[in-house]
Image 1 (tube, rainbow, N blue to C red):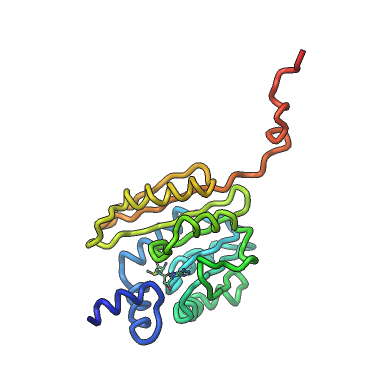
Image 2 (cartoon, rainbow, N blue to C red):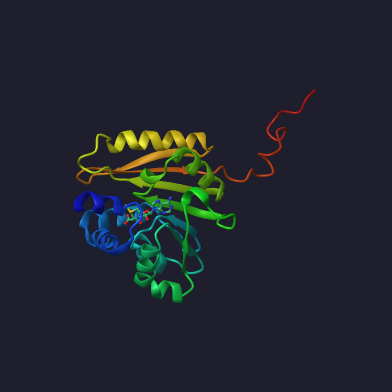
Length: 218
Ligand SMILES: C[S@@+](CC[C@H](N)C(=O)[O-])C[C@H]1O[C@@H](n2cnc3c(N)ncnc32)[C@H](O)[C@@H]1O
């Protein structure tokens, strides 16, 4: 009974059990390692403008912000408890102007959250009732050429493999108009998957001119 209530907390931690769920996320070695892996995969540049959806205790943000000089990372969370926990963990980044936190729902993002070079989420997409719609909206929040990465690690009891989840995510990415889509699988036990796609870059003036590469008409 308590176990099932604790499991539910991971979708929106609150109250006493929410504190416990946050503590588990912050200390479980697989979660710590997975967040490190994702940040390595994202490889942010010092000026990257980044949005993390559902950051929980803020492990990935803690890895990212020291790499930024002029860049900035915004953390968006449904749970006010997790937003406060992540802020405490990353207070130095907030004070340095490299990090900010917003409370909100990935399924109803405010208009001003846009223009990002990188948007990512770790173990959060399974809580979206309509992942295709959420991914389509996130794709519009990227700068041209910007990158969306969604990672998931199915629990050991799940019927879904990392490969199956990755394929499903890539389908949503393609429908959203993202290009160069691909998955990376990390060999945890069980494996974790990260699906990545890019927003179409700005057309160059040559590429946007359909006649630019044609032979002269005679
Ligand atoms: C399983 S936890 C993962 C936390 C963190 N990404 C990590 O790997 O440690 C999922 C987090 O996503 C948040 N979340 C769930 N649905 C969300 C939504 N629709 N919008 C924003 N955050 C959401 C939850 O509150 C929770 O903190």
